Length: 176
Image 1: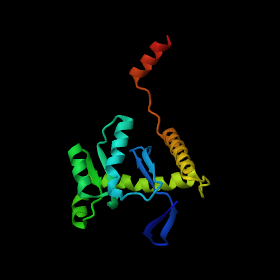
Image 2: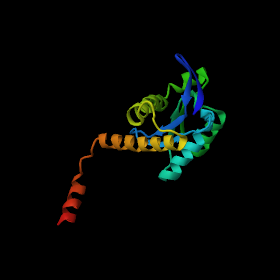
Image 3: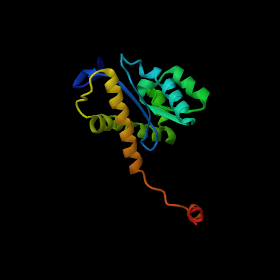
């Protein structure tokens, strides 16, 4: 366990491990990382998280949104080179005012705020409070199971698509 300096009202310091969660549009967790030691700054996590998602899922991430802590010159350049839309909240107030004019940026920031709640859902509903796993390997395994369970819960709650007439006829043809 580490001492995590949060600088938040009521919780200047917390004890535990830092958990990074990256989720898709539908709320499915696509990437997560539990840090055994003190986590690197948020800005250093963007590229490695994106690379893991793209490697594991064989997709190209079209847009990224995150809070101010993830903003950096290197991340801006990295996303630009990859042709990935940068929805990371800028540190500069002037730039933030300008970026808020974009419907895409605003939509991604609204979506990002849901990720904050997602962390609480995983922590409180799927991991349990307090986390009873002793040792880092056990905590990491507990997080793995919590993410899997969470994703199954999210997928089960997604609206079911109605079968199109073409897919119905194909199903009937296969059944015959």
